[in-house]
Length: 165
Image 1: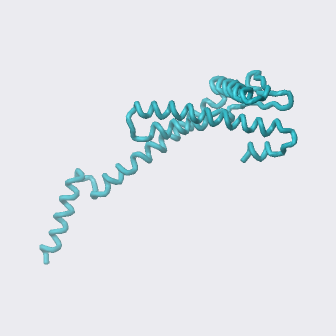
Image 2: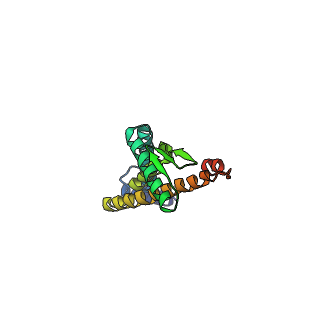
Image 3: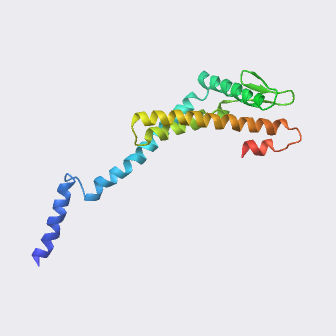
């Protein structure tokens, strides 16, 4: 009977030895499984810190002016007549102020955190970030163009519900 009890103990001891003696066999596998999630959480927290640190800076103000300019170019290419003065995008009947929250900076910073956390080579991360930069910025400009179109239609009462939802 002692042999039946001591045999599993020997198997458990050999299992501990395989993990470096630091714990049960699932311990090291558990940390390996948690590592990507911890990296993702850390990089997203760092990204949010960067975002809120830059939110009121001149860099974001320049991005807002750039967003207003590219939105004006897009609107003028489809038949609108708009002008830009800093971050103010205006037509004869409607105007909007492109503020920091209207830019793609927030989504880009979060996307950057996710790209950095993803386990891939640095070259792939760089390509992913550049592709995301183009796509997210393009989608954001299209979003502002759509809101401007809704807002310029003076008969429309949908701007508030379209913007805030």
